[in-house]
Image 1 (cartoon, rainbow, N blue to C red):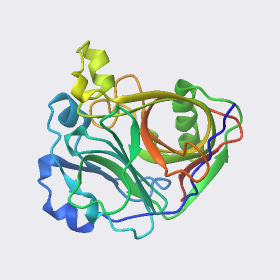
Image 2 (cartoon, rainbow, N blue to C red):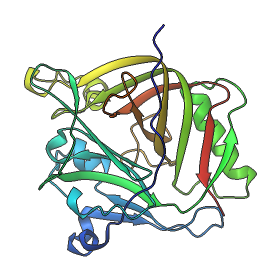
Image 3 (cartoon, rainbow, N blue to C red):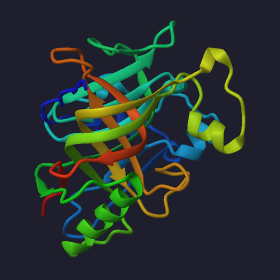
Length: 261
């Protein structure tokens, strides 16, 4: 059985100049006042706008995301042409190539923009070792319990990370259309917009995500309380890839992180 290797964690970014340039209706910022949720959740675009209403124009330039130290975020490229994950000093972008395979976009981001981006500046994290294997539904409950254990308000969106081993991850990378939306609406996806879809087994990786209750259509897909991305490598030394996670099984012993007080 082949094992993949996780990406070391660094830290990243600032949205300064981009924020002032956006129209209010295109950008939403969720502020957080409870002690364990430091700072505001930054959001550009919402699920129902970007996917349901096909308003997938650019809302924030990737070149405006400065590598300053502490932004963790998940997002999608304009035109739904790929996935973006920002984690620990690293921006990972993946797209679907003409052969339908997953490829990493490296180097200068040029004029690329994100149509949706959700993130938060986190200076310090509190970690918890995952005590047992967790299915995707169990992970949602585990996150809620960890927030409440610290006296936090689980009804407010919050970023999280997991670093460790994942028994299984059903992932996709969009290529003009969202496969989750298409399945729910029973709509066929044209071949030219067919996403990359894969089930990854036994992978050492990092997950970056946002936990949000009652945020379907804004931050999350239906029937889930999380919007999460996987960062992984096919082999040691390979360029990192990222993908949107649909279903995940977390191995016991992985490390779960929430923003520290």
